[in-house]
Image (cartoon, rainbow, N blue to C red; front, side, top):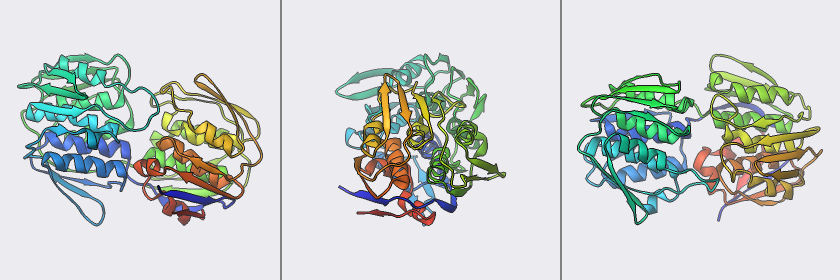
Length: 417
């Protein structure tokens, strides 16, 4: 099993370009199923989850090529096999996004119940209920979701709770349904908006994306198109925290600043100086120790749960006590025990972590437990004295493109071994 070794004590300094967003490209790849002809997807990050989604589509019969820029050309006109098997699905929850598109275009789907990071219950019942409301016949047995329908029918669908992938699955399916679909209590995340942008370029009629009510007028056919994936706001946030935790500075090009207001606000509270342009952000910490910041995760535009672990690491060396409240996932403090191995002073009570900042962390062997937890351990390793070995780095490869290479460009000392 591979690990990465971080030699701490080196300030992050320099300029880097943000990759395409993992949480945007996966639903877009799934949405290629509803378009006839070829789609060209640009600014695709080289990630394990993207490779898994490509493999899944290829197994179904899609023709797919990846050029030297990692841009993908894909055609899903001849999917002879509408099955998403357990062997492929078990490592990636986003594979559930194949369900809606398959039923919408091909009238049938067999999708394994998904796996992915063990950060808490993320049930797929809202996906199923939404498709059933549109007329799909669905049964769940032997670990698979079996769905069929002659043609989906538009309907008013009220999400019982805000769900990003649930919104995306119903949004994609509704583009080929008969009549109008209204999704109420829809997720408003930027990645949902990017998906809608792609679908509209294919000929879909959508309005209200980015609000809690999305209206979709179904079409008989959609057509492949060209789309550039939005920047990864979580990767951008992670690099900003890397500079903040080491007292350094960084400029991230290809930034999506309007989507990062909550993160910018908390970094400024921590003592960082932040300047933005139309497509870049610069953070300077001026060698200062961070101030503690209290955080409460919530759906966009509030503070994102995917940045919670990174701020746990930042608060671990802050000058004071902070509280982080996790409202979305019940198992998303598994990184705390590993940070404490490095000398952090963090105590978890229910869904809240109480963090008493220490002056220094110490390098130690630690194990990643999920994608964002792995990022927090890398960040802690950057700030720690000595060497930190992060094990089970397959998690970080699911969501960060060549993280050790990018960090090393910024002055870090990281090797993969």
